[in-house]
Amino acid sequence: QVQLVESGGGLVQPGGSLRLSCEASERIFSWYAMGWYRQAPGNQRELVAVITHGGYTNYADSVKGRFTISRDNAKTAVYLQMNSLKPEDTAVYYCNLRYPGANTPAYWGQGTPVTVSS
Image (cartoon, rainbow, N blue to C red):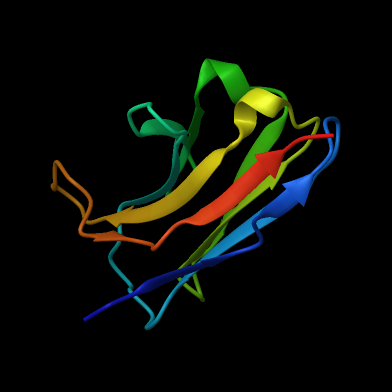
């Protein structure tokens, strides 16, 4: 069973930066997209950013210009560089992986918490 292992979350002051990492427990050659979602207390899980195997990216409007998603195909890994963090970015961040032709992700990470507070 493939696992996605996330790291990099923590406590940061407003305006600060964090870099999240997510790596699969084994290399997957044929994945279609990997993405980051987040869920704040009392809210539904929402898309933050997604990147395809070929490098196409898409971002939620709330993070455009502040967050950057990237991937390492050799490691089956995805990263999220988060700059200019705001208190409203506070949430548990989850990564996932989707195969070609699939409507839903095949795997989810366990989540890494991000808290933006002074």
